[in-house]
Length: 267
Image (cartoon, rainbow, N blue to C red; front, side, top):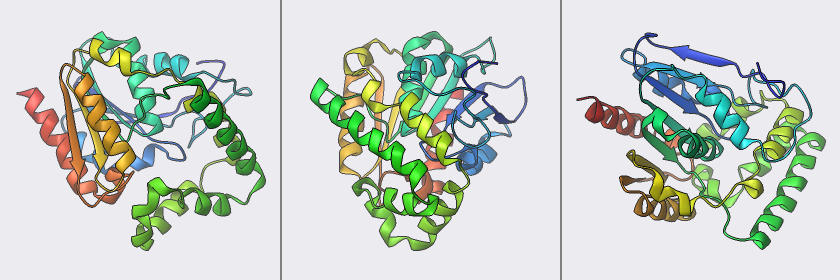
C-alpha cells in the first residue's frame, strides 16, 4: 500500500478474463460505473477503484501537487500482470487514464476517454487554473457540501443537466457522500494546472483510442475531435442530447457504445 493513499477497488467478473479499468471523475466514486460494470462483468474482469480522496479511498497524508503520474503507476499495478487490457476514464479519470496510457502503453489494447482534457497550452492558463482550483479547495471545506455541489453543477459545462432536475438531484445526493476535506486534497494532487500538455505525445500511442463527448458540451466535443486527429488510431464518438456527462445523461447509449466496441476488438 502506498504511503500517500489507500486505493479501494470494487471488482467484478471472472479473475482470468481480460481486465477493464474504470476511472470516475472528480466528486464521483466507483458507484458511477455500476451500470457499465454490471454489463461488462459476465465476460470481463472489471476493476473499479475509488480514486484517492473519493469514496472509500482516503489520502493517508496531506496531498502535494503533481501526483497524477504516481497515481497512474499505482492504478496500472491493479491490472493483471499478463495480457493487454482496456481503460475507461471520465473527466478527471480520463486525464488520469491518459497518463496510464502514456506511461505504460504496452499494458493496454485500447482505451475510452470521456470528456477528458488534454492539458493546458501555456503558463498563463496554468496560473489562472491554479488560482481557480485553490479557491475551489477553500470553498470545499468552508461551504456546506450541498451548497458547494449546487454551485459546482451550475458551471457552464453542466448546463445540459438543468433540464433534467431528477437526474441532477440524484447526482447531488451521490456526490454529497464524499468527504469535502478529502476532495480538496484531490484537487491539489490531481490539478489540471500541473498536467503537461499531452498533444505532442498523442501520436506515440499506437493502440485504438476512443474519445467520447456530448454534443451539448462544445468545449470537450472540440477536444475529442482534436485528440482523435492526433492519434494514429483515434476515434471520435459524439453523443446527441448529452453534455459533459454522457455516461450519466445517456447511460444506455454510452454503455452500448463501450460494449459494441469491446466486442469488435474481441473477435
